[in-house]
Length: 420
Image (cartoon, rainbow, N blue to C red):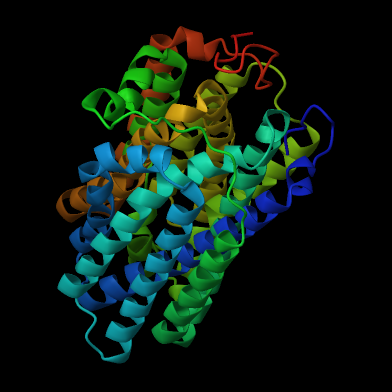
């Protein structure tokens, strides 16, 4: 993990509230991974249509887009802890609904998509709140360390969740959804146990100027704009997660457990880089490291699309996860440090829409292209597009490219850190 000013790699965990927050995020992310593997495999089993795999992502993304002007404002004006806890409870209800459909042998696209829309609404509200809550639980000097641990939490869940999800689904779909439901419930309880943290809010009446403050901040702050838009277009083009059931079944001839291994591949690579960063944190040329990471992500996507050998495909996915970990770590730290707390929820709402567009809408892009051209061409074209994005953005955002280190310098509280 990135070292804070104290040099303590576990500095964030010295704060009890953050420890509960970390565990809640880990368990909820674990549950999401289990659901993602199970729904994807179950849907492809039921329909054998790659377009439905893409629609899984689309229906989860649309609520974030529709509610973008609401979710960030809610996170900035109301108790972020209670928003996160309530959202995790709703997530548990969605898991229970999927479990009920499976038990009743009523799993079919229409009811599943309805549940995924509710899941998307829950994630639309939770995203800005959870991203904004973390910085409220640790002092500024421990924030880079907390961001690194947050990334590791998600990546660890990305390793274990798909594998366990594949194993559970191999036993029965009911087992997978039951475990996901229980993990969501535990996550909600942990967040409820966090004492209400200090949070800057505005007492002014809600206005369009306030609602649009997140957009306005991002548009004027090129560091944040470049970092967010880079992720949007890179993952939008390079995402291949939605098509993994097709690769597992039809290209690589693997079963549900093999799908779990494929889904875990990026997480394995990411956690390896996280361990490396624990002992060799990024001290210089952070901007360049982020662009190199995006380029390697595109290369890994290209190799995965062309491979018909399981071990090579898993290795390519590990490369994708390792490179993505670098870019995510740099991007999330920059956004956290450069964004004032009073607009953090609204900025993170925009960021979450961009992330959702890159992930869920990227899955829809992949599924749609696969239904027309086939799964392999869809992934190969996406990998080439991601490489192009890395080059174009590096040329278009020189200020972001020249960012040197990720440490917040001493400065006035409401000023962004200066470029090294």
